[in-house]
Image (cartoon, rainbow, N blue to C red; front, top):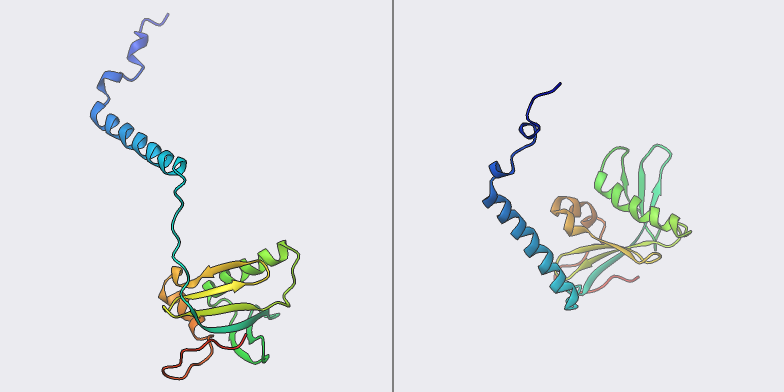
Length: 164
């Protein structure tokens, strides 16, 4: 027969710190109420409009048998760069993500991707087939720099958009 008091095994609620728990509950409640008010009021997040496009380059990315990626100017067919196997993980991830969405939608690789250089210095990689876009500067200057070198050269002081 067990003669131990059954109440000794359970944590005693009176020993829990009530002030921190009350503060945590108030924080959670305030957060939930704040989100509810914003949602019910119909307030939507503001997105800044894109700056004007200053440079455009149409690109084809071709996978090589050795794991490399050939990057070609879609208009001229010129080879702009070759990404060696196992390098440039950000470029690979960005392009594969867009290519995966194309495949999911039953689209082929014929339509080129658009690399847009904006007046404010931002870069955007756009898939006109799926309407997906990647704002490259969101991933840091080092990652965006991989794509900057693919933009067409501009003359000093030029303020134009390359032919699409």
